[in-house]
Image (tube, rainbow, N blue to C red; front, side):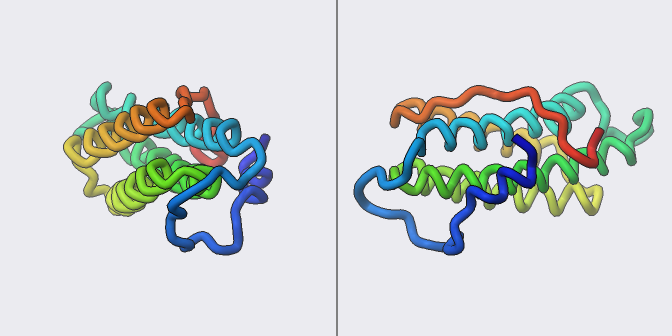
Length: 154
């Protein structure tokens, strides 16, 4: 599945409120898990791991490139979380959790683009993902990190 294929899974009403009942979409769990896993994989590969290896610190080798890759991966992660939200809308708990993490990553992506992201910002996003995984697992929508190459960040 390519990033362009993923875009076909979105609904025209991206800003619809979270429902209060019922699973209404075919293969919602599977499709949620796929897109959430892709987002998690991109976050870990291009944002979290470079942070832990010192890639964002002043004087780091290829620091500007690391920030650019992280910004692209952040945008990809935001997109995948929006797609995942479309499938999580069948479950009110997951719907709210995905919206919260989408907001967190939009903020992080903006900071990465401007080069002002801090370790605390990235750790907060990691904690958001961990919370989403816990919530998803407890509601039967478990997902794991998927190894992903983000177009434009390779």
